[in-house]
Image 1 (cartoon, rainbow, N blue to C red):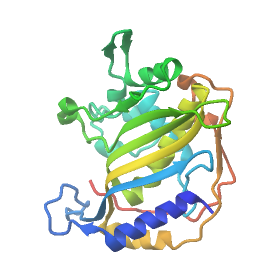
Image 2: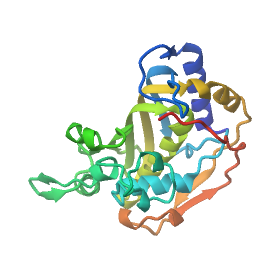
Image 3: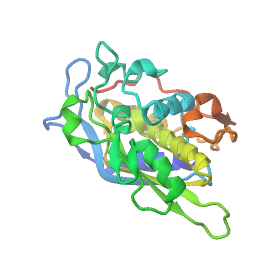
Length: 282
């Protein structure tokens, strides 16, 4: 059975049974009818996924892997903050009339900084360091720029990806690992979406760096289930679980900027029915 399912079920059960509520507190999010959107939450959740064992897609319901890959490419490859460059509607709620979400996500990745050896944006620097100085402990991207927050239509949730290389015994190629730091997460709507996105990003970066994709460590500061999601989550985590799908990439791609969603290969993805009409707090 999928280990991602096991992790998700254990996390959700822990939040529902042992979490703290924000009910009655002053909260920013509201439902579409104007009602405050309260949550049950746990602080400081850390989940580990080993991509050498399996790809961490939920089988309790389907995660749209091509759409997840498209969004992660929108941020880190296309470095865009405009929804017209994205092949889904998930950011429409936060876009202005021009399609911009402000100085957020891809905009931050594309910002150029000066180094002693030249000028690079965040993703280009990651790729350069992994080629030339892979055992550095300074390889990361950070989307949370305080001076730009007032010009972001939504503050970044998953904001910090830290890359770390290890040399495993008996392996010819190094292993690339990642820590994903997330300040806040809507567990029902976004948990496995983000996990699969950054697993795919790790796989792509590892492939073009001639490394094996290893562990994805997901650290969530505020892991929460919204009040109107609790019954949906209870039903979801009680479902039958299946074996994880086999997920791979076109091995002929050796340049990060050449990946497209056509290079994603998904085999044997057995899953439960999709959860429809999930209310989203904004």
